[in-house]
Image 1: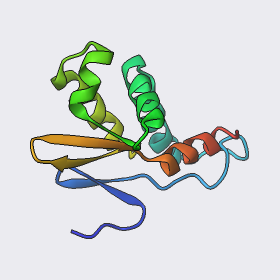
Image 2 (image 1 turned 60 degrees about the horizontal axis):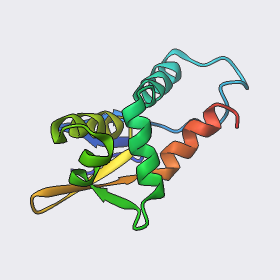
Image 3 (image 1 turned 90 degrees about the horizontal axis):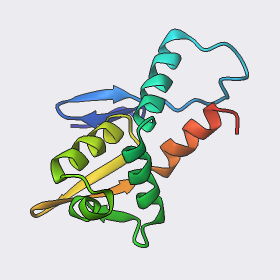
Image 4 (image 1 turned 60 degrees about the vertical axis):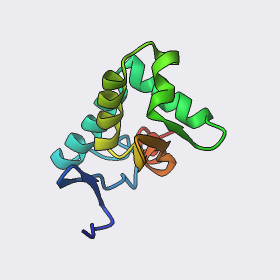
Length: 120
């Protein structure tokens, strides 16, 4: 199913994640922009998810199998999958199934758009 450039696939539906073209410090946010940004920042407001992003950013091949998060994070595979789904729902990570496992990579463009929204 094709998606518009400003949508990501989430389960059977889509979520709008139009990147901010300017900082939230430049002008007051509209309600839809504020809602979208708050979902993304809420996804980052968890220590496990921040560690997942950090691990993905440092991955030599740019991706990590879901099974390789379990030991370093001391969490069950189900818990890791939940956190990855939260990050995926806001477009920060992408998963690709390969046989039994899903491999995840960081969406650096989406992360950069959140950085830009903060004016940094």
